Image (cartoon, rainbow, N blue to C red):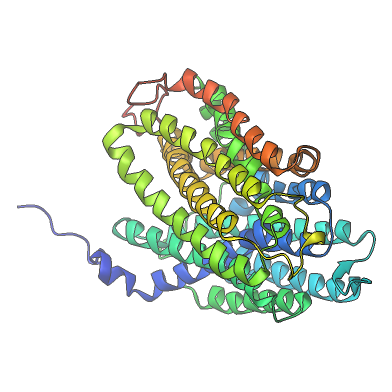
Length: 457
């Protein structure tokens, strides 16, 4: 007779009613909000305030903290700052930093916005640089919060709860992106931008209350005793594997074309003359729904076709989807610039529909590609050092987004949107070339060594 499960292992639905898991899910809202702000709302705000594409592209570098969070993750693992516990103390400090940063952004935007001769809100000279610095602070605090929350989730969840809780966290994370992305942009149609920024800051104060209400793990892990055990061993173990460097480069470049085109999507929508309300409500909701659907479809297809084939098919799809934006730009015709938009020149049906199709196709393919990438990361992580290695590999994944984003504005400005999005398709070639080295075309699986425990060694 099989042993009975532990008393703490409820069914999936029952575990979702657990207060501890519900609070963990709600805390994921504050993880998703900064990402939705930096990669959506900030770009739309800057473009609407007259900031040129080259500056917006360069400011995508503010996302670097998400790419390099592994550098200070051992500090989060080693030290406790306040009384609520080692993990929650870092979450609390990060959320306070986010609330203060959004408050500072609201105050600065209030002083820096004025109406030009045409009655449009624009930023004073040099304001974009200061706003970029505040966005960098937001990204740093957010990355620190992510490190601590992921570690807290590992400690607070029982094994039988990890599946249901992970699904709940993803759902709230995407909801957080919608709140600080789609909802914020939608609200800006009627509320001043400084009010919108201040409201986001207030939400992080509410998140601090959730952090204080969350429970401490039943058996908190012991902090690493030495720097070597916290930092050096996970890196030495990973890079001692065959093809480790190739996999690392692949993680940077696999989504390079998708990232290059994706960075300019929000400025493109403004230059296509979509209103903030339409971008926030219709366009972003379509994109989020497509991403969730693509992630689910990608996960299902991977089990049928294998990870190697999935990486190839999803790679082609996420690169090729950029062509849909080229078609939308050509259908719109003429010079695309937010400064030329007026009520007398509404968006015709054809470019509007092509834009919607482009967003659904690109975001859906992006979700599929991301699901495959995360599966590869899980495959190669050594379970003994999963936290640090996962932080490293997911940071490399994010680094490609930053490297592609920095020149994107300059390229879109020089080439125009139709040619720029074609270039984004070609930018996927290096990643596919690296894929050939770890998963030759036609092979069902990847030819990389799995994590030590996963491999059974």
